[in-house]
Image (cartoon, rainbow over all chains, first blue to last red):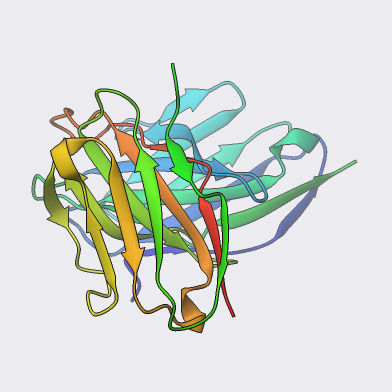
Length: 111
Length: 117
């Protein structure tokens, strides 16, 4: 089993739709979790950290489920500009916080 | 604030040649990462430095790849000799590196796109 797994998609949705991505991780000792966004031929940029209690930033909501070892990202009211690849990142624990990226989920928002 | 700088942006070499990439992290960032991103995949961590010490290099193919971070600031990644499968984007990232919970944001440079013919 891979350390971090994501459905590569693509998820093809109309503007205004709500879409959700999941990411599973295998190491139960993982300590910190993130979603990064990567536009085509650009570098990844932090979208949001994922906290145990769940967190929201505008139209984006991130959740962590430690028992089932997955994190999720919900995007409400999708915009054309949300089209990108969404990368899940899990930091291994043990004090060194070594990051592992998933392969990313591609989102295409169409008019 | 200046971002992470990388050079060159593009490099084309023939297999068995050598190549070097340079990264200048954000000022004050203690942690520096080198990633390899093959088309259609997520970034794969090659090596992580904390100041000038190596935190993890378990996925660095040490028979051909080497990296150093002298004086805990700039870093270079070298491939010698290159293989066809090394064609990828090489991303450098840095983070403040002081979070006790590992919640630091990574800031990425624009990457170097390497083509090995």
